[in-house]
Image (cartoon, rainbow, N blue to C red):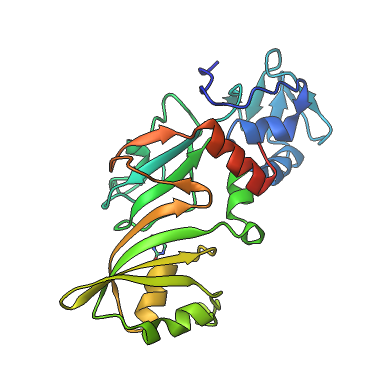
Length: 257
Ligand code: URA
């Protein structure tokens, strides 16, 4: 069995439902795990189990998905990375481009996956976990997880330029209508400006599209806040496990863990 992450939750409710076991092992979200079970892709002790009431004891039972053995952590790993520019948010890339998997401890915590994504050129706070329930819960729009970005944009921002962002209603190319954002101007330079923006949505390239939409294309983008988590002084390219307090804050937000 893999080593227990230092700050993993300590509850031990064994036996546990098979779908919970799969989610906790990082196979998939609980709902997706139910689909895998119903589809007959999950074996317990060599027997295909399609009943969602099936319970397993992680210490005694052998679970396989599509023939691959799945092991349970005694708890899950939760990690934040200060992502450098140049890495794509994926755990493997068929084209061999640098990806964030190279920067996090995948051997120590198999099943680690990123929660949400940052563009290749975006830096800052990216959360990873092995907990299959955590992604859907944190990324669900109903949970309104605030994300704060520091941006450097082209041109001199004026307060009135920000009105469409603050008011909400900006329509992105795919038709999505943005909620009101919190925005402030931090610094004005020669032909550029720095600003901070907080949004609770997470549409693809949303911040770039929002500033591009007011005529100030983004030159640099950095995320330093994700819900209750702050990047602080974590050096670029480094990761660390979340603290107990940070986990408790995530627990409050999602009702999970
Ligand atoms: N918004 C963007 O445009 N890019 C990111 O990487 C994150 C948010």
